[in-house]
Length: 444
Image (tube, rainbow, N blue to C red; front, side, top):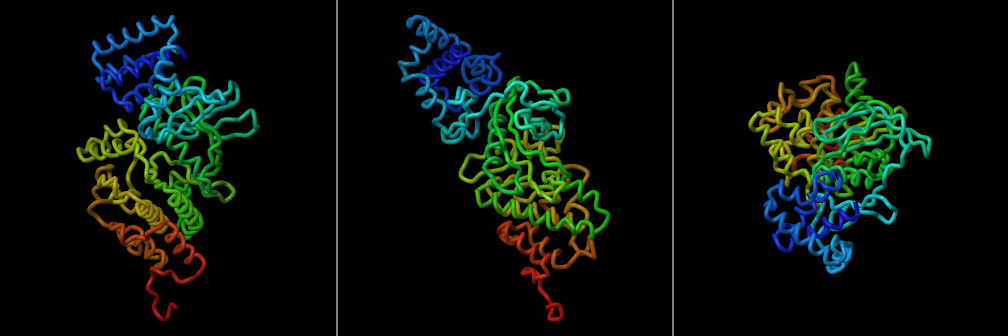
């Protein structure tokens, strides 16, 4: 494999220098080759229309001639360009690779290495044979699935999330062959890195990033036993039961406030993405659509493609995009996200989504409903949800005001931070005066 990898490096150098292939294009096809070596880098460049067949033949001949002139040793040829390591740094980390990872190589620990944004390297590990056993499927998401596995080394059950190609799931509990584009690899790696860097009691901790024996990328994390916030809401029989979830809601708000302090916007807050543990934990699990300040947004194309399909009322096409597969129905989506104004999505967008969760706690239903994703999006953009006290007359009026402020279509009129929303709800829980509510003299 090292010889093939060296040939790919040489071919890439010539393709960039002689045929104008961009480093970003080279990174993408190289990453795809790394997870599926059956199709060579030169062939991938041709298949994507980056090179012509004549270009490929010419460049392959130049590589062969150069290797032959140096006794059949491609490493010696690479030394002419400063060595393989220097070639990688020059051609595979000179752009922000948050859009696509680089060529997996070998880390000092012997594991796979992925190039992340600004040329940083992420060293993963190869799954040790027999380490993770007794797998069963726990959940399936937009671009991967979560398995419950037993870590034989540490004697504990954990969750293992693996990246799967669109439309495949494989036999339950069995690894699925990974044949995926570089862009999906980039999204998966970003999700793992974001989740691992958010160290908060209400955010699931990540243990390990690596590659399974069949080539599938994975990361492991704490297994949270319990039920989703969505299931908890569904099980509530009345308003009083739902109001008992307010403490979990404030924990969710605080988790978002922490993420925002680290420059991370979730963009997919909904009850099904939150676990309520058996011992009182509130844990946010899914950061697959998150956006990080001051880094390239790896989801831009998917979001725009998804909204384009919805504009055309072609909902059957949604599974073609990672965002579409994760979207479901946009009950908790703010107007700026529904309209595709991606640059306008910020911390206040998450505040809106939190407000939608609070609306469901207070009324037992989402702010908008409809027969299709397109219909709900239209309501998000053009309609206003029914007032809380109209949908549920017995709801506490202070909470109704808090909720409706969070749900304002104009971000400037919402709470400007998740911490503010959490504080307001906590003030209600503690029996203090809620700032957004106008009390009468009798109530004070």
